[in-house]
Length: 277
Image (cartoon, rainbow, N blue to C red):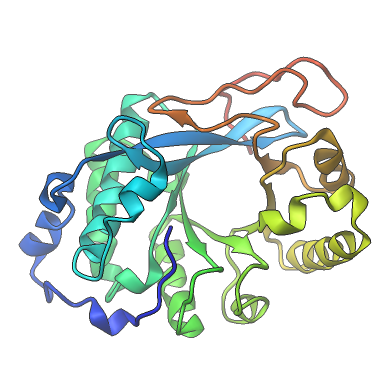
C-alpha cells in the first residue's frame, strides 16, 4: 500500500449516513477496476497453509503500482472500503477455507465502528467467518498518530477480527506501537529477513524482536523468505509462520500452491489448503 502523509481528520466525507457508507464500498464507483492475487502464509511446523494475503492487482493481473498510482486523497477512503469487499468476495468465490489477510489504510478511517460496517456486511454476504479475517496495518507507512492506530486495531479486535502489524521494523514508530497495542500477529519487515543467515546484525535484531513478541504472546510471520537458509534461521528460532517466494508466488485470482522442497527437512510439500492453528 502507498505511504500516507495526512491525518484521519481528512476522511469524513459521508458523516454518519449508513446508506452513503455502504455506497462508498462499491468498487465500480471508483471509476476503474481491480482484483487480487493471493499469496499463502504457511505454518512450516505443521506443513499447512495458515492464511492467504490479498494483494491488489489490475483487473487483468496488472502489477499493483498500476492501481495504486490512481489512488489520491479524493478516492482513498472509497478505495480502502472497496478493497475489503473485493478481497472477501474473491476469496469466497475461490473457496478459501484458511484465513484471509487484508491490508488497510489506517488514515482512511475516521470512525472504526462505522468504517468496519461494510466489512462485516461483506463477510455476511459471502459467508466468510469474521474470525478468519486478518487486518494488516503497515508500520512502515507515515502514520501520524500511533495511539489512534492502536484504538482502531483495538476496535477491530473487539469486533472479532485478527490484527497484524505489517513490515514491522521498517517505520519510525517501531516498538512504541507495542506499548499501546499488542496485535495478534507481527510480520517482520523483509529487510530484516533478507540474508539473515549471513548477517550478525540482522540476527541480533530479529532475535530481540522475537523475544519481545514471544513474551507478549504475539505470533510472528517472517515475510519475504526466499531461501532455505533464511527459512531455517527463523525455524530454528521458533518461528513457524512464514511467507515468501520460497513457498509460493502470488497467484492472480487463485490460491497459490506450495513449491516442492519448501518445507524444512523434506523435499515434498505438505497438504495444501489445510487450516493452520
